Image (cartoon, rainbow, N blue to C red; front, side):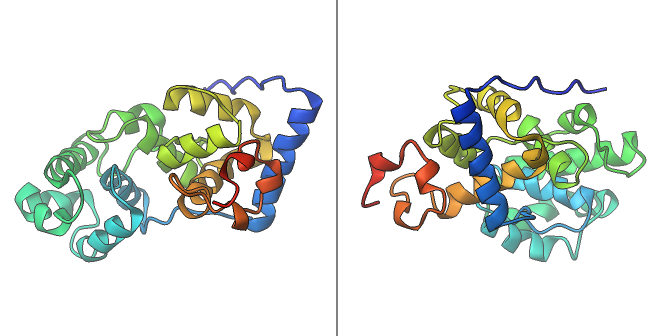
Length: 224
């Protein structure tokens, strides 16, 4: 059984700021979801695996054509690596991703009876599925509260002073320790969407930011 993440001691002022921050996110979007299109656990795993170093828009364009043809491990294996490539060649690193999708489909079929495993250890054992992908899948399906740290989450967490971690794993640990427990299943999406549409890397839209007064970095980007 997974041990709960120890809660981090914050000063009363900082605890109130973090609570207010996530209360605000909840007010803006009560039930955030991934922007990746999927039908079931298997297609979610495939979509997230394809999304590494690619945008959700790019992946959705590819899977809109792929999933009607191959949405199960059996169909994916029948398609084969050569057959899969034309569907995903618009996505970065498509050759390696096609290889991984076929390999993970074989494992799901042969080792798990065709049913996508929904525990962290078995998910992370699949080719092309690391900790971040497993976290996205487990969190999106409501199996395990998790915060997958991509470039958006990493950037936003530092700007909002939720973490000063130098690695995604450290940022993840910091977030899991301070995000108010009722919001743990949604924090991942809020931070990603905030980074994708408002807290942009080069020119954050501070003038449009709904949490600007709670952001210690806002003054650095005045006029952004």
